[in-house]
Length: 290
Length: 336
Image (cartoon, rainbow over all chains, first blue to last red; front, side, top):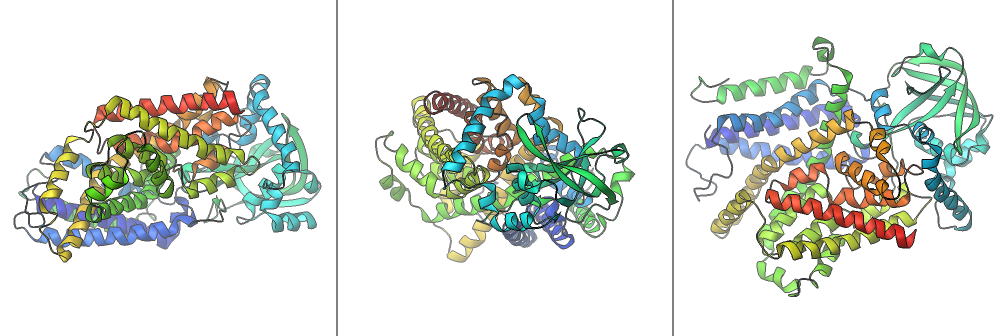
């Protein structure tokens, strides 16, 4: 391959990346890869790659000798056909598989890989969990003394007021992380309230038959840092709901204790299967950047 | 494939057509069912592409900042600001690292350029390890992720400061000022010198973009391989497997450092992942995760191979690992 061909191929690959980004942005599938707060960076990437693709494209039209440098240096445009084919395939394959499978949503297998908080905490031996438990207790006692420390309640003041004043809580994508953080921090004000939530069904090997988790993935930058948020559901006939099915659950909130942790639990009244929503993930709310 | 053609351009046009076809119909065609692809492979694909997409803007930023350094920073200016004493020089380096809000993907090409401009190796490495962790954005995200224990955010910054200085000092002990950039980088640099003064301004801008594109491809292949490995680990290795190794006072930090290395998370996001380990690992182990991850990880090691000699990258990895581990044990013994 000669130099203009390299430049031509590179311009087409860059153009492929541009098409891929436009496709993701138009379909909204980009939120299945990247958190909304990262979008300015994605627009920046789109523009820069577009400019680079055009420059490469027009340069490749000039077949004269190394006109841009005039120093007889060939960068590392590889002369070996096999080597350059492999390298370019590295760029071509993600663009193609990205466009083919851009609507894929990670689910219960990723959740069990990443480890659900409760199950990880519950799963360890009591001897292992002792030491960190003590530090956790020390933290909570400090919390009440030190006004500078942000508790969940201070972080979501309006949401906490709103949730405590109502008798039927409706969890949405916007208040999902906040509501779960508040309930895991202090479950007492919420016991006995009615709650409606959406999420995918997920259970682990060591779950009893009458327990499932209804959860969603929370993302701070990209899917690779996704963490699972969810609420335990306990009741009869839960076996019929397969892992990864999206459901709407309505029920009454209870408090359970597991290994010294207070957790919310739903006694379900109604469980309705639903379609996977177009925005299946929830996003960490950060008051800075992006 | 295209051996028979005198020019491969017909293949390239075909590629363009394929891109357009996928652009228009990629998500309407049922490829999943057609090839019966297991969901775990689709998970892998999603993780892999999300890491690539997240890293590309920062790699591009790094490439452009490094181009600006190339054009505007004079070697003499750089020399003036760096103290002659190699150990005193560590302190301004950490300060630069703390001021630059650059994450770990962007810092590699920048440091490479600074070293080419005559910055001593160990000073450059101090910037490389300190910039991704000692910065205001990372402090804030740690602060939010660990609201119930503010000491984590401060300790993360403090330990990163100590580790950066120690890594710089050890690198100086072992490598002095010997040249550690690889052959391709050195050649490209000599090439830069030859024509830097020969062009008018318009040519210079076009050339900056030309070089940015070349560098995108040079670095992109390492980025993609790194993201692929990180995606494979994220998809197929359960985090519990690592936890089974142990979470005691000695094993805990080691396990969390291993986790930080293979997950290859962006330093802005890793605090949220770390906070999910609260209660499962001691705060020392979590700090080891938070300090080690931004300084080096799987994706970054592969990125460094784009510019540095293999032996140096390996030595760097060993030094950072040993120093972070030792410093977290020291922290555990005296501050917890």
